[in-house]
Length: 299
Image (cartoon, rainbow, N blue to C red; front, side):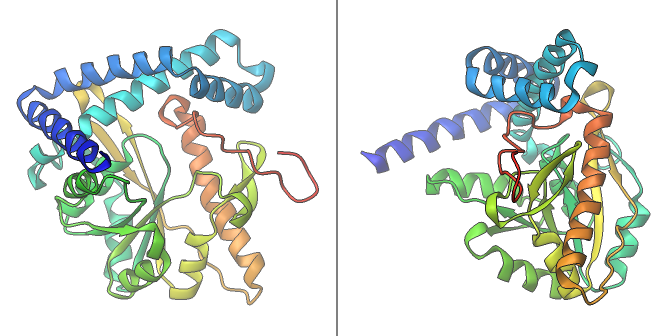
């Protein structure tokens, strides 16, 4: 029965992908926005998490009406990018400059040119999957870390969507070893650093509160000497996107390993915070980001 369910799920997804190739992109975005609104109405648990997070971070400085506006806009945004990802097979290198406009390309190009590898970091913000896909079309392929789906048929279909531009998928089970190999081959590694890392994380400030954050980025950078470059995206009119590569974040090896890891993790997290505060509706507020209590304190 499980195998049959997997096949039915894959067949349904194949039909959806086929329909997505036929629908105009504007129609897909409108459908995604509607699906996001439906998610807001039906998913009471994650709606509540988003509201609680915003109240905890902004307190009385953010009126309740504004909290609800941001949460609703957030759900619609994630619905749009989910449906937009279904149309990834229609994108190509020609989409750079039309669907996607770039700022700061000199930062990422100079990082690749040094030949020591690149660690590209972002968050569940904007259209991070589109950013990764399009970078492959810019002849700067990435290794992407992802948790494999339980359904192997869906996993293969999703991997094809993500790797259509030449990117490589790394499964979390062997992520660190494979990321090291990619960096040493000069391939960029993409990491999102905005999820709670539980007891494996480094506690650093995020949005004014202590947050358990993955140390993987800092550990890899200090070990390999790879450049660390931030990238974020924001929507523009007509369904297009602006992708912004920021200046490299400085990697300093002082010999105090723990302090160096904490410093670099905090610096990268501060970059994420800047973007979240700029456009809060583009970030994944539905995640319990601050659930891990710091040592001796309360989250």
